[in-house]
Length: 284
Image (tube, rainbow, N blue to C red; front, side, top):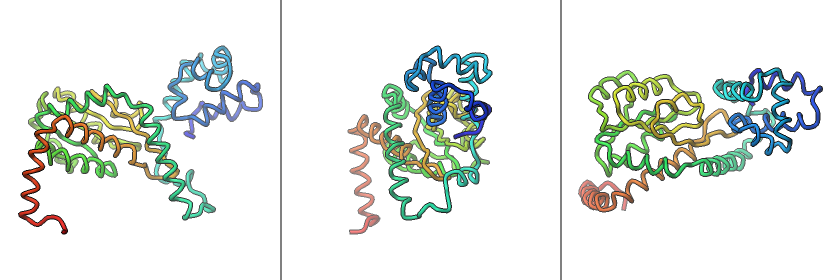
C-alpha cells in the first residue's frame, strides 16, 4: 500500500466506521493500484455497498466529495517507494529463499493475466502500423528497462533495418538531431521513471515524431507524451520490477510486425541464413 493522506485518514478513522464504510476502506487498501480509477458506482458494486455510501464515505474522510478523494488516491500512485523502501516492505527475515520461485512465478502469471485483460487491441494494432510505416525507429530505454529495449532493437533491426536504441543518455541529442514526423520513438519506462526518458519523449513530440510508450500505469509520466500507450503490470513481491508482461508485449509486437510484412521478412531471413552459415555463427 502506498502511503498518502487518504490511507492515513482511513487508519485514523477506522474505529468510527460503519460496517459498510469498512468494506469500502478494505477494498481501497486491497486494490490500491486499480481502485483510484473506478467510478463511484463501480467502486460501490465491487465493495458490495450502495453508491450513496461511497459518496458519504468520501465526505466522512473530509474530502469534497468522491472526485476529490479519487484525485488524492490517484496522486498517491505517483509517489513511488525507493528501492530500499520496497525491499523493506516486501521482504521479511522469515521468508524462505526456496519459496521465491513459486511466489514470483505466481506473481508473474497474475501480471500477465492483468496485462492481457487491460490490453486494447486497437491501440496494439495501431502501434504495429506505426512501426511498419516508420522511416526510422528510435528506442529509448534506460537502466533496467534497457534489457527490453535491446531485445526489441535486435529483432526489429534484423528484419526492418531501420531501428536503433539510443544507449548513451548524454548523446541522445545527436541521435535525434534529424528526427522527422516520419520517424517513431518507442519509450520504455517503469517505476521509478527516469527523467531522461520523459525528456526525450517530450522532445520527440515537439518535433512532430510519432511516439509509442510502454509503461506500467496510466499515471506514468511517460503517458502524456505517447501517441500510443501500452500498459503492462510489473509488480511482484520484490524490490525489482518484473518484465515478464512488458517482454510479452514486445514479443507480440515483433511477431505482429513480421506477420504483416511476411514476404519481406521471409526474404530477409533467407539472406541472413546464408550469411550466418558463411560466418559459421551457430553451433552445429
